[in-house]
Amino acid sequence: MTHTTIKTRFAPSPTGHIHLGNARTALFNLLLARRHEGMFLLRMEDTDAERSREEFIHSIEVDLRWLELDWQEGEGVGGEHGPYRQSLRGEIYQHYYARLDSSGLTYPCFCSPQELAVSRRAQLNAGEPPRYSGRCARLSLEERQRRLEQGMAPALRFRVPKGHTIEFTDLVRGPQRFRSDEIGDFIIRRADGTPAFFFTNAVDDALMKVTHVVRGEDHLANTPRQLLLLDALHLPRPEYAHISMITGGDDTPLSKRHGSLSVAALREAGFLPGAIVNFLARMGHYYGHDEYLDLSQLAAQFDVGRLSHAPAAYDDSRLLFWQREAVCHARGDELWSWAGAEVHAIVPEEEAEAFIAAVRGNVLMPDDILQWARIVYRDELELGRSEVALVQGADGDFFRHALAALALHGTDFMALAGEIRRRSGVKGKALFLPLRVALTGRRDGPEMGRLLPLIGFERARQRLERWVNTR
Image (cartoon, rainbow, N blue to C red):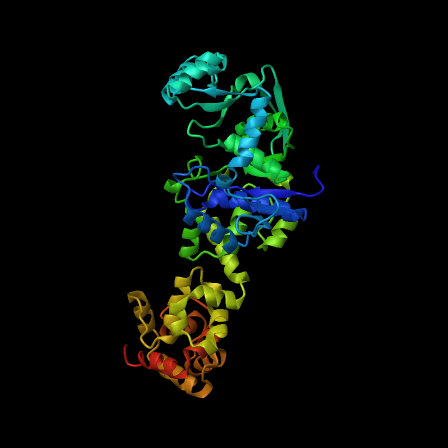
């Protein structure tokens, strides 16, 4: 690293909710900053006035905080380089437009979208890379004035120098070289007066003293344009790390048709933040193990050199794996809160800790906890047809022995099972399976030693009595 103090940023456009790709970008920027005891900044790139909405700004902040991706500077926090919404930085941008104009590096462009589209198609048909022809750069002052008097609103283009090579070292992809002659003059302010991404993104990174930018590889071709602008304005260059895209099963970028969900939707579905963070941290970054890590541990082991060139494939089964790990590593009070109000209404508060400890190894989602709450605490126990057949297939005196054992040993499950074995001679699966099914309605689940005391003596007696005379 060439900087002593690292500052990274996440700069979303608030035109929708954060999806997994956005969340991973934010995560990698935060991990890089924390790895080097630096700073993580949040900036809102809300120049698209039609699509940017306050509710999405709020949603982004809520999602980041839920994932514990806390920022130290920026939107909602403040800092010395604000404002942190681009819609409020118009005067700043105008200053830098003027600097470029005074250096002769800009010109107005009156070409219509239709004219640009025709030119682009012609270049593609000729096997050439599409770039602006420079048509308006050759207009005389009189021709420009005439178009202005006709009410034509121009965009503003940056003059790309001819015959230059733009070079930089990408922290993921190594040395990069781009020929300026293949870029063409590009728009830095649209005809409606709104600033373009190339311009605002680069200027803000420099003014906010961002030292490292981790972003998707789809931005790689933007980088030489932004470096040209920064050099022309004598502003510092950040270092760039362009990460691989997340793909679906068909090797195309992950989208809604692959089942891609927003962070908010995953939260509503019951996923824990630690599951999502551990899942995303391994998508395009090599940790070398599947040990569950908190954010500080993920940061300590984060290395830009371990970011992969290859696309990161989305895999539902891996997300579920990390969900199980997150449940296993969460504190009991976190799981109790996660379980939700319906579980809270069923499980006595004084038994909450014991209940969560009993079921945590057998649940993935809050609905699973709710099912076990109903199994343990509701008087009516529903069994499927095969479970009924299993229980009815037990020895005729099995449940009489079970009731006698219950009366003798109460809810001590191991003592109960031992007494049944002594009285009936039944052991192993033939003992434990019908007993578990009669008490819980399930063939498998949490340890009965933890579960039976929660079911309680009276409820257990009623459940065993149900099967005494059903052969």
